[in-house]
Image 1: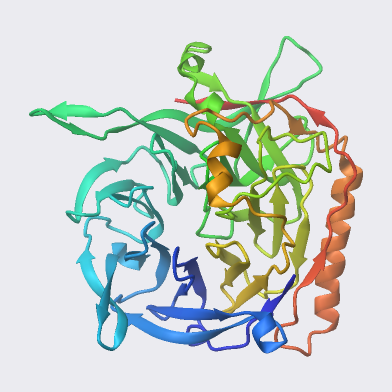
Image 2: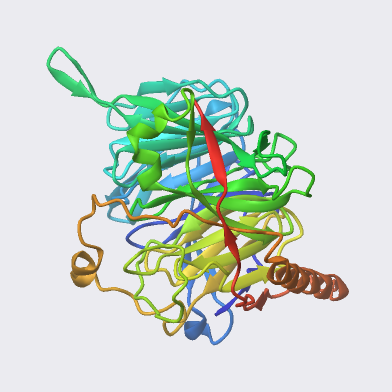
Length: 468
């Protein structure tokens, strides 16, 4: 792996708030507090015999305030960008004699306050957005109109995600809840319309207590004091599970909370009978990714599937292939795969301010981080460093039926019983940050990376609770 913080003027030295790769051309788009969107081409380290970099392509100017979120449509012919003040713009790719040009296609008006996150549906027909006005909106991208408003949150909606299989949507708010919506189509005048209804509100977990006659509950997520406007959550590319940042876990009522990200299984989210267990509450098994010294603010999946390595028999993810995903805290990056519970790479000490977004290139060989310090870090993976890709021609043979719910084992890592591996990981990260401080003469040092400890983590059952 090669990479570093690219030393260019990304957005007039102002915070870079969002980033995304074009799904076909692999051009990189970044958005910032300078009100602009910029398009870049990545330059491989093998091409220039040094760390990977980018070259400037074009500038998209239209917004009148800081741009907080942007995502390309699945087909790549549109780009959605959301900004302060509720601005939401759809850009369309136009082919001219001078080349490809992005032009304003539609302005979507309804949010009253800042748009913090957005995502396209898998078919590109709809868009979901989250805002400081405490609401989510599902938009008809073709008509440029509001399709449905989801306004049950009590605080800022800082993350939204769409199930790639089209059944669910999810929203995440600083009111400490993650809401799961299921599509229950309705018919009007013989026309069927999608209609998303809140099925679960994931909020608290039951904690073990010495006296079995009593019970204690703990919040699963951090409150509004989290020093970030973003809680970017994500569904896995196959739709088998939902990864949620900004987690906090207590192994006992009196224990210190630990920063984490939670994994929720599609199978358990979709089981309708769960709603009958405790009247207004449901239990959803989860997997916890512990050990981060700072809160997790964004997660993102590599779009590619990889062949199993066969190096472990204790995988908590029962998948016939490997998925790889990145978890960003305020100051560090962890890269995981679904064949083990431990991160395979840790990157720390690359930014002086909070990380804001993560993006993978369509082939999975580039990963970019954006930060409020005005810079982006670009990592390049060479020579199948992440593993052997599964060719598209073989994907159906490996994955089987797309509608089959793939199960996440009903287990979580016990933070107390795996304290050695967690402490080791924190020590590595702190050493990397310390090394950065000692070499503070450089504006931005190349990233320090560490292979994660491979000690086998102990596991235990817990019962996260979702409240309707």
